[in-house]
Image (cartoon, rainbow over all chains, first blue to last red; front, side, top):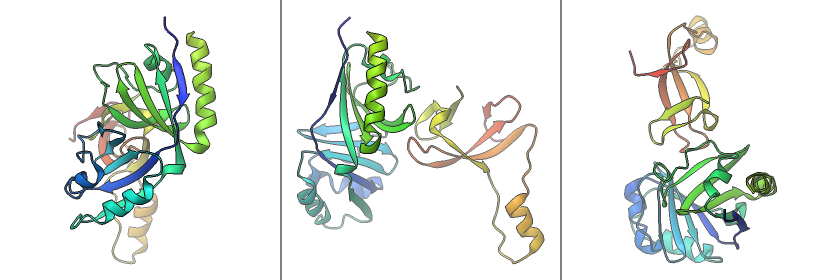
Amino acid sequence: MAETIIETLPPGTRLALRAAPEPAARLSGAFGVVLPPPLLTAAHGGKRAALRLGPDDILLLAEEGAAASLLQALAAVPGAGPVSLTDISHGQIALRITGPQAGELLNEGCPLDLDPATFPPGACTRTLFGKAGIVLWRTGAAVFHVEVARSFAPYLRALLDEAAADLA
Amino acid sequence: MLLIPCPHCGDRPEIEFRNCGEAGIVRPTAADDAAWTAFLYLRSNPRGLHAERWRHVHGCGRFFTLHRHTVSDRFESAP
């Protein structure tokens, strides 16, 4: 069986968008991705992605260093209505888990059903891994993107490495 | 593990949720000791169907009401 690879992704821009579907839709053009994606799915285009984690809870991911210009561009959208937009780029880091056993590896600490039938590529959600709250996004059949609070990252990484050793 | 039906996310593991106590407790508008005692301290604690508030804290973050049978722990539709 091929190895499961856990890698820390380079820094990126993260914006927490709280908005009802209608105001969120008006920001689509400025962000470059159609907002809001269906509940618990991600939409992405180029280096940008929008993860719909709750009815009015959207996590925007963008390239490193884009926070200031994005905030300005999104705030300048005319008539966007009541939205809350917060730069949380430095609050969390991203991991990528790749390999045919990536789902099994995550199930060592996360009780979600990660079968491709119930959690297909494009699905995303907030959940728990061990005691750490994570954002889990399946970017491919055997690829998961994990966002975790920076302070929890060493804990999560240690648990994942231990789980990987158990699977190997 | 108990699977809790979140109205937004579907069946999810119980560790993603927080129980927020009995549902339908109305805050008194008048400064009446008996009404406030009931509001703050008195709960029905039934053996049977119990209306409860839950929060999907490690998920969509939303509050919602469920009816749980306190003997079987099954979630059932409202009586």
